[in-house]
Length: 394
Image 1 (cartoon, rainbow, N blue to C red):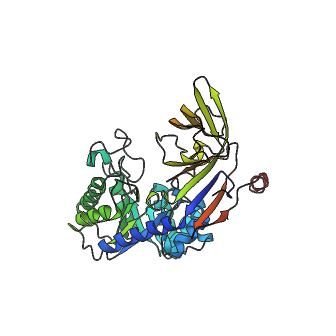
Image 2 (cartoon, rainbow, N blue to C red):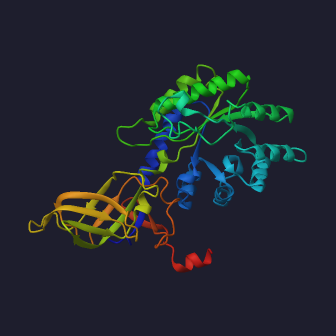
Image 3 (cartoon, rainbow, N blue to C red):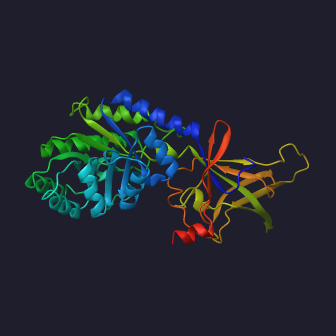
């Protein structure tokens, strides 16, 4: 790592392969028919998307930009699942014309769909996203229990039924339901509750469906958390109570489970100073790079320094590791009763692949280098942005 220019992200090829293979193995163990569609919003690094396309994954996209990105990178339209409220009419029509799966999330999409079929042949499969009151299904599991989710068509106020009736009126077959809803603790019980909810919706509305889109939100290889097998066997056990599981197409859209653990972020200590009775350690990365939501209270990290065997190194009571930005709250973690860090020491932050690179702002410092670690070698897969990069893309 000494040769790497910091700050930088590092993709561990072996961990990524293991995540994908374990996920596919668990899917094959439980379902005859499934789609593994990667959530592009989680990390849209082009190298990563090309890798996932190469191993047969679909792309789950939620905007025109993501749709055009994955097509540019080689995903065929048939391997795209188009979700979310930010679809453009142009890409929406493209998806309808050339296959794939389109899950309707807004009323305007229903109107566009009606206009499309007047002069075009509908190739894509059409699904509806259902609004899920997660706290009603599993008390204490929702982030916004009072307001429920803001996505999908509500069953309680009749908008879901109206959407179903609209499709019937236009002779458009409803092929599936999209029931994605992440719970606070990503529990197996949450997915079982979602599947029971889907069965209830299908039965009450007498729907004949090809697929259930579970969405994402799974833990990956996080220690002391549910495994892929835990999730998928539980989903199968519930869906099998109503559907012919050998015929039903089960769609999952993982992001965190694929990329969280295979990306690390390497930083270098650039300065230390003593303020009052504690030491401030400044690194060349920022909390924006590893925790852009600023909601974590702990981090997985390793410290690399040359002081491990030097008994004369000072032991200090408290060190506050801070980012390089001008924000006072860019404080990352603290260490106690440990060797005093010095400029040039390295800190490697682990498990930072999900919702970091796609949410990191161009604040003070531009996008950093990204390296691939494979077979004990590092190779640059995305050069850092320079001022020219910003100007050319402005």
